[in-house]
Amino acid sequence: MTAPAERRARRAEQILTESRAILRGDHFVYINGDHGEGWIAKDAIFPDTDRASELCSMLAEALRPRELDVVLGPATGGLIVSQWTAHHLGLPSVFAEHAKDRGYKPSAASPGPLRPPFVLRRGYDRMVAGKRVLIVDDVVNTGESVAETAATARSAGGDVVTVAALCTRGNASPDDVGCDDFVYLTEVEIPSWPAAGCELCRRQVPINTEYAHGADFLAAYER
Image 1: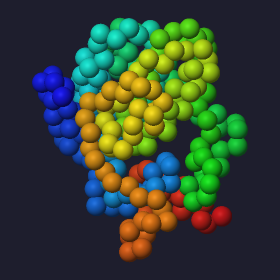
Image 2: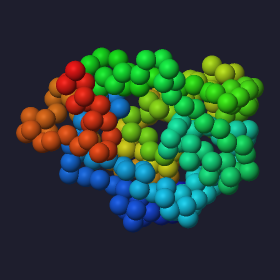
Image 3: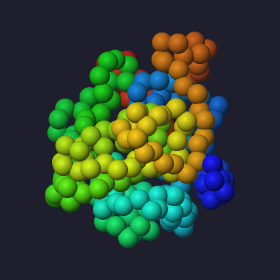
Image 4: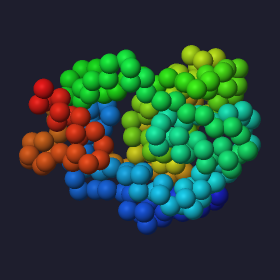
């Protein structure tokens, strides 16, 4: 890691810590159904616009000198990162959103997706078509959100050049995020396990329903 990259990583983790965004010692369910003892509560960062701007300014710095035309993030957290990062890069910003009219049925406890696919509405598909696209998000947990957003951009005719995030949990590879060029400011390692082998479940540690996807996971069992 270069000296500027190390500086950005230290500062990004400092901001996450000061914002109390790094949660540990609890029982969380992730979007892919795995369980773990930690979570990055990105919503704790965004109310402070100075912190959001600084993080995305550092991300923009890390992305230069790539040739990019438009920044695309998955709603909702990725929408905020898209806006601020695009601002610092001097590029247009768009976002992808869930197609909730396609039968959204939370199913964390059973096979199948937790949520509907991402789509480009509001004319954003035309802004992506034929353009060099940067996909951004706040925190990469499993890589699914950014990989789905990248696939959506490609289906609209966009050329996905880079995937970038403020933070990664350290368990997502370029293959997982759907792009060979994967950039992030800092890494906060949080182990995870398949639900069937979850030590926290075995010890009957209650699932956190405030953060991550625990509420959907429990709702699936209640049906």
